[in-house]
Length: 89
Image 1 (cartoon, rainbow, N blue to C red):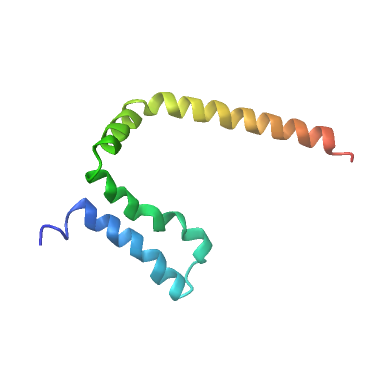
Image 2 (tube, rainbow, N blue to C red):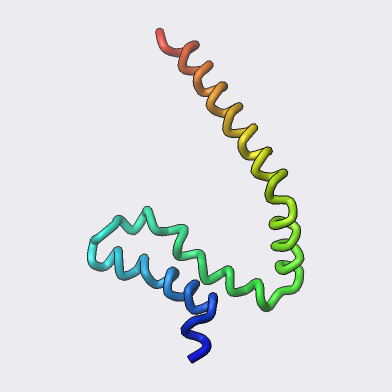
């Protein structure tokens, strides 16, 4: 009974939902591919290096978010520049 309310069971449920959504054609199967990878999160409990990696990612999240934001802004600026350059071609 404890398993039903544990976070691992939620990962299992979220991992199975795309299958049923694709079977009943509620959403396209291609859009749910990322959800099929969720059971891999359960491997963290078996590998201590992954636990350490997860701790590092969580502790450095603000710095990574800043970096991701800067990269996103640079991509938008460069894409806009390419659009302006190639607009007449």
